[in-house]
Image (cartoon, rainbow, N blue to C red; front, side, top):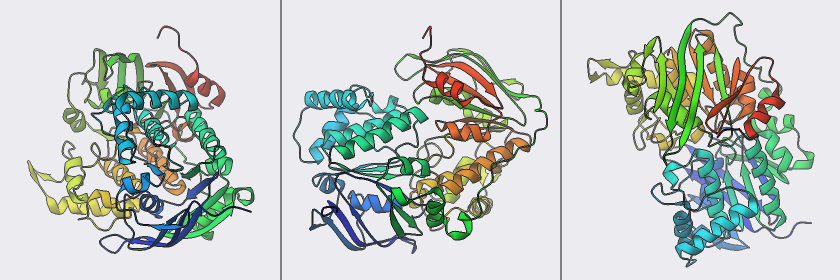
Amino acid sequence: MRQAPIVEAECVTKVYPGGVVANDCVSLAIYSGEVLGLLGENGAGKTTFVSILAGVLEPDSGVIRVKGRPVRFRLPRDALRNGIALVPQNPMLVDAFTVAENVMLAARLAGLRIGLGEARERVRELSERYGLLVDPDARVWGLSMGERQRAEIVKALAVDASVLLLDEPTAHLSPPEAEALLRLSRRLASEGRSVVLITHRLREVLGVADRIAVMRSGRLVGVVEASEASREKLLEMMFGERLAKQPLSEPRRSRAAAGGVVLEVKGLWVLGDHGEWSVKGVDLSIRAGEVVGIAGVAGNGQRELLEALVGIRRVARGTIRFAGIDVTGKGPGARGRLGMAVVPEQRLGWALVPSKDLVFNVALGFYSSPRGPYRGVVVDWGGARRIAEKIVETMKVKTPGLDAPVEAMSGGNMQRFIVGREVLKKPRLLLAMNPTSGLDYAAAKAVDKILVDVASAGAAVLVISEDLEELLNVADRILVMNKGRIVYEAERPFDVEKIAAAMVEEVEGT
């Protein structure tokens, strides 16, 4: 028999401007010493719910209790002072600060007075104890998404949170990193903390959770003991009986021979943010009609490689040829005009302009594309609106409206919109980094199919992903990147053990 819950939500309701009901009378208890899995498709209300528990949002109605006492959180610091910390899907660290400085700031918000030296020591100690590999003196702007995620977890542990709300914590992690984090979740629960794990990966919750709660369309569908759950039962709860009984098919691709080389990279060397070599002599080529995947543990040069291919990071040595033209010294605009489209891992700030609506983001996103809604240099706003409408309809994007700011959408719906926009450019080359990050099962399968369809239509597709399963699903070839080098190349049928080993083994000469 369980003890009284440490945190309890009773009929929590949240309605966004425009009438979107994000949470509809959600009641859920969280107990000490457990891992509670929280599932639901994009827009189901999971992130809104944990944001309320963390003081990021205020509910319109309902009650939150901590250790039986009703509380009202107006700000995240109120939740922190009650032992509740949110590790968001998109890390919310201060870019200009070091990891230790971010920890010191969080500690002070939690009512703890610690200096920078103590903060640095806490980061080191927690990093070593839990195997999180976080440098206290690293500046956040130079970290990969996976490294930022680990820094967020260290920050929550450093303020001694008793309840950790992990929103898609494995989204930017490689399979070995994800497994390590899941083991960490169990360890934290065994130490008496409560862990709420939001994920779209059924295998994760089935492997680590004590209980699994499922949300759909803003409501809590039910809570089941993990020992009584199955993949089929959870899918039925998430999507309804019809979809659960109609398994999603694997993407199919034309097996016709690939066409000519669209992208050719030779001897590419690129410096990282701290002056170190992040990309070391990389050679790769992609032909029209094929999907090439790049696998690797976060922080092994994948981000810097993508930025060099896009044209926003300078190439120190080597060449990049796109569509037969040397674009090594050209910017992203020139590459876009040649037919390059990009789905980056950073949604807000790169792919989408915060506080701007969908129509504006269509116009800006198509700026360098010959298919953009422009008359000369003048924006055709009617055309931009029609494109936005088509993306929303085709990609089934849930949004309060075309004139709503992009932040009004869930992370998954932002991703649907970005992918839909880039595909509508009908690119010669599509570059995608972690394209299904944060997407639910159905949406991820749909995006995977889109990537394959784009290649089948004659484009070259490069997918850089920390989700090996995704690459095994869509790629014709997989390249493994380890410490800045391509160390292994495989074609179908893939040897998963060799790919995984190449991702984590030490590389000589680095």
